[in-house]
Amino acid sequence: MGFGVFIQSMADPLVSVVTGTFNKAAYVQQTVESVLAQTFSDFEYLVVDDGSTDGTREILHAFGDRIRLVERETNSGVPGIPRNQGVLASRGKYIAFLDADDLWDPGKLASQVAFMEAHPEIPFSHTACRVIDASGVELRVRHEGVLPPTGNCFKALLNHCWITTSTVMLRRSLSEQVGGMLEDVQWRTGEDYEYYIRIAAHHPMGLLEGVLASYRSQGEGESISQESCNWKGMPEYVPVLLHLLEHPELWEGVADREDLRRALRANSLENGYFWLEHDRKDRARWFARTLLKHRMLEMSVFKLLLKSLR
Image (tube, rainbow, N blue to C red):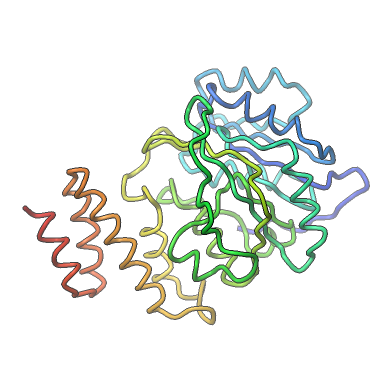
């Protein structure tokens, strides 16, 4: 999906903030207020409501012209669709994403813009964030101490998605080059991970110092764009790795097939045993069968399958 040609005028903001939301009435006011409270002011804020029915729109209307509200008549079911729609309607040199239940620290935009302006060779950056619960209580720092440093992050991303969408900022020129997030219905989850993998294959990624945002931990099946999703996408790593194996053009020249197979093996085994521990043998069995389907005929795979069949 291409975004076309962008021509910046004198009136265009430096940053476009994009939020997609669906039925987040409990959190969206705090989210919007955290953007409007930024110490950096040269931004526009686009909120794409994906057919909310719980009062989210009424909350958003109350902000008036402080936000640019895009209202979809029906829910898309795919988080990439409202995000892409927001990007298409935006005008800034930089694009920053914020999910509708997450929060920014007041200095987040100022710090990230300064980083991007100081490093023109880096088209994409993200930050560390804290994890909060539904009531906003801080639980921990997400991925504390293990975030890959600035540079080539492709192989690190194969093993785990270290990037939190609500901390991301990218140059519009990069957005135009790589296109948007996938919009097919199968990408009800994992669309952001696939997007970052696609970027990391050919571009360095920047990591800012410090914790500048809050990620709200939700239960299984919650998304910015639909009420539930297939458990096979939770977490999303395995479906994305399977997609990459089917599309070598996305990674040829920066990795080899065995790199992807190693990541697929590790993630599938980890997920399989996770579901065994939670007494969901049907889910564990899916991961074992996925590995066997890809001819990973190893003892660890057979052990997982046998345990899932008992």
